Image 1: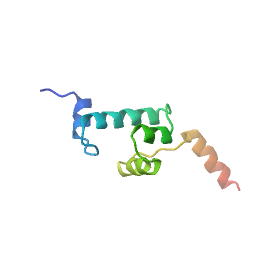
Image 2: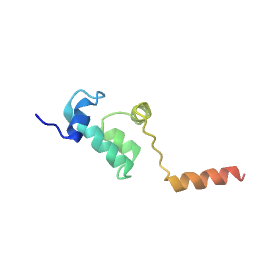
Image 3: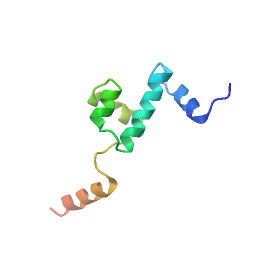
Image 4: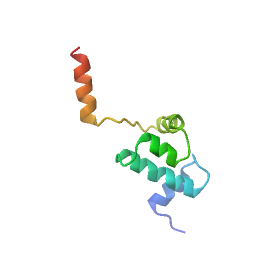
Length: 82
């Protein structure tokens, strides 16, 4: 059986035991990072707490912020001028 790159990544991802849960996780990650769902809603869709989901994101090296990159820079500049 020839696997597509997407299928191969999902199958090798060891965080969840079933393919369906892995697929849901990657879908929710996409929704979160395109700002279609909040962090709280993403955690809810994955049936876990916000804290647990945040910890998983950190463990796999994904940084999530409610602020856009421009907003982060503006906040940083504002705090430095205080």
